[in-house]
Image 1 (cartoon, rainbow, N blue to C red):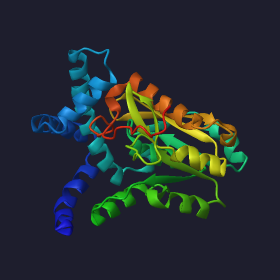
Image 2 (image 1 turned 135 degrees about the horizontal axis):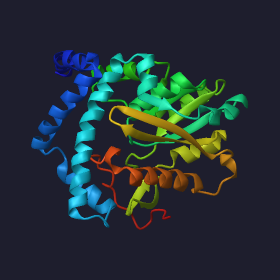
Image 3 (image 1 turned 180 degrees about the vertical axis):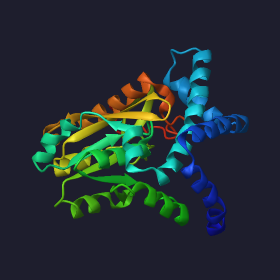
Image 4 (image 1 turned 90 degrees about the vertical axis):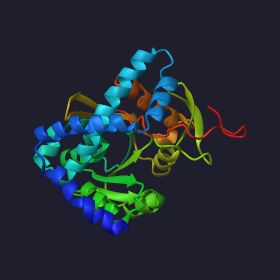
Length: 293
């Protein structure tokens, strides 16, 4: 059944991928009305926004919600467009600023840990990095259950030289790559399991946070870089790296985790429209025995 579904839907995916950008966004405008009529996860989005911004009025929350759904449609189609984007289009659509901030680290033969979030078009951030910097980008990801779409997505993510590692092989992959200068990217705002999570306030809510980036950066003493992203206008993004910690092994416990989480929060507050609000981020509640901030 999964194979049949893939072969029935793939022509549509490919058609979207070859659309000119002008047509792609017109299609997105149409898709927005379909999503709006369907009510896709609207209760989740409104609840997440209301809890995250208690100071905002219902009118403001609804306005952000509508803007988010418009953006979500753009994001879905932009992700499919990645299948056919040229290197020139990738660099023009997702501009990488101040790459020289990382030149010194690369010159010292140091690998880095990148922390980022589901903010803006994280799929376009990968090609932009790989095409602009000498580091070997390694993206840690969660494989899809459907093997056919997993193969398609993997091919899309590796088109411009990026390597990918399933999350369960992260440590093994980093050890295997220890002889090359890598930038290992971790999307650090997903829902963490209760076991081993660090609990802190994030967007006005008690939140389970992944400690993986901190543990890996300390184990390999790899500088921690936050990858900030902005969307100056529709269909265009800007990326700017920020060095958070040059020497992770000389940091306090949970300092790295708290710092990158607060930096993610800052970005979301600056422009809440382009974060993944339909994700059930706060489905876990803290146990009394859990570590607190």
